[in-house]
Length: 569
Image (tube, rainbow, N blue to C red; front, side, top):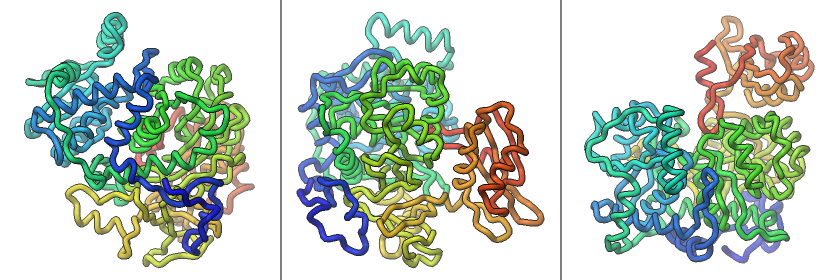
């Protein structure tokens, strides 16, 4: 990192946020000492070889063990002719083999393609075909889906892992029996030529391996996203993109992580799925950088198991989303978790609601530090300061090296206080979309800024407030209504646990607001909630229709599926 800090840099008018950086946080990030993710992995193994890299179902895995498995996998891949330029997919939840697979693919010079293991065969087939993958590592729980998808795909090498593979000679078979026979989580499957992942590691251990030359501009991840236009496409994230995305938050969080007493092997809760860019950066790669022990949570919806893990391994860092924080606060055993050592609770992916932030701070003593980003910018772009003690309603200021702006519909810059589309520029911004030159061109402004599709407002300090997604905006009689505002106000009612607003067609107004509500108080009536909102929202913003539901449809990351709610009307 550079020695230049916010105290010694003159603040250019276009970067007002630099004046508000915490002392010691650099304005830019220098990755010359760690130009690729392979360098980052090597450094972590050398510094923390005997420390715990992960914990899974109570069993610990050292940096040295996971690194060796990654080296063996790299040798196996190279022996199959899978190296620089090739794509290798990973279709697993949060299990210890995930990191080993990532390490091996990157060491071989290939590109990681993260796959949602809950995909249907159609969705999986589409992504694998688009990425033109040469191989895939899959947990056997999802092998049946892969077998179905492969019927219409070119041949590819398949490596199958199991939950119990790394749990030891006693616990491993028991875990596999429970998964297969008790939970019935493994459907029958048949993939001719499939090889056990552990068998590939054994083979790789006996093979020679000549590490290929890897440049910082090489593509490390092909990370699929809905993108700014809603079409699934692969964002090409280079080694330099990801290294910047790791070193910038490390510098940003340093005031909290490096204060006394120092923590040698901090615990980071990995409850977000590693196939998502947020968790991959904030849990796996940032964890490597700071020598953390990742508590791997394969199913965050199992709150009982999550709370049990939190009690056994009191956390120091907790990356999560608003819905997970809220769900934990509602859990009856939440008060039995020791949060006295929690240094950072950061949130992204969706807006943090005031009610959740205030309850979390009151219960744990550690504020939720909200940030914002997107896959095309390698996860994080902005974040609130770690010394913030109150919910401010913004997603903070840009990380070192990043720049943001707000543009109108014609692409012209807007002054502070005016809402428009947020644009981003910096070393974390993707190289473009895989095999989609036209989509790549439309993703950027004429002067090279990434268009995010988010509506935001930036104040004079450079603090950003995300109003909503452009596509989620509701237009009522010509007035723009942003769902986040409605939801924020609704969740201030003590009887509301969760709320989501969507637009529905209306003959008179074009659209009106419909509010889906999960009640905390079963006795909460529509009239009471309507009166509460009437006192706090102007007329056109008020919901005209209500639906009380037991739960809201969500992605594995915890984002609410608004489209599913719109279609349910």
